[in-house]
Length: 284
Image 1 (cartoon, one colour):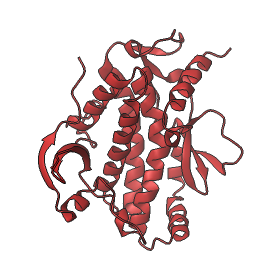
Image 2 (spheres, rainbow, N blue to C red; image 1 turned 135 degrees about the vertical axis):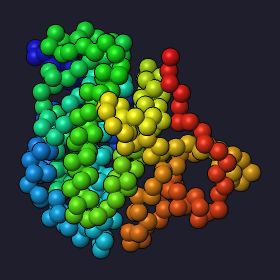
Image 3 (cartoon, rainbow, N blue to C red; image 1 turned 180 degrees about the horizontal axis):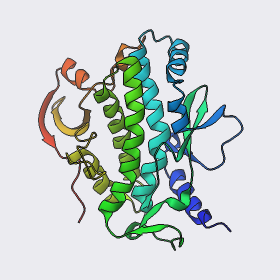
Image 4 (tube, rainbow, N blue to C red; image 1 turned 60 degrees about the vertical axis):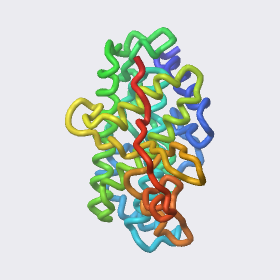
């Protein structure tokens, strides 16, 4: 049996415990109904994104390419992030999300999932791992080392993609990082309900959203405060709700509407924001 098999088994188990929407975003053998599997580095180096986006926009009747790009960017996040973050939170496994180690699984030129190469180059934070680690997988002594490995490669990947989308469409980078933060928030909410993962989900969520310093170890954190939980006054109650810092702009699509956590919608509805509430507290 190959050394990577136990790791693949655990990764598949965690994926299957998530909501169906997030499942099967990390694949080891792409199904026959996909159109293409291409290394992420080669996809972005080929400069094919403008052509893919134009087809994407035309098929959905979206005349503004910047708005179409925001929706396409959400699809990209939904293919990549569920392949990486659940492994870190639920298993303590750091997967390399860099452009050189990820292939995009495309259907109709839209990312649906990813294939990760060289799983034996993953890292492991043992306090979150319940099995016997493969000898070839490097163990991390500190949680900060796991964060640096995962977010270092993930942010490198996302920055490259965001830069090219911005260059072609002028969609603000802040909108795309907001899309990323929104997907992360939804994932951590899902992971909080997975057996044994609630504390780790709270810890990771706080690292992503509450700290201005990058979890990758250097520079600022592009996801800090992209989603916050705030108490709002609505219909006589004051629930705490997630709010994006930036609007995704999809309300500008034909026959569309504001998202529930849109900051524009909150203002338009006349809902009073009462106070900030931290997303979570660090686990001890």
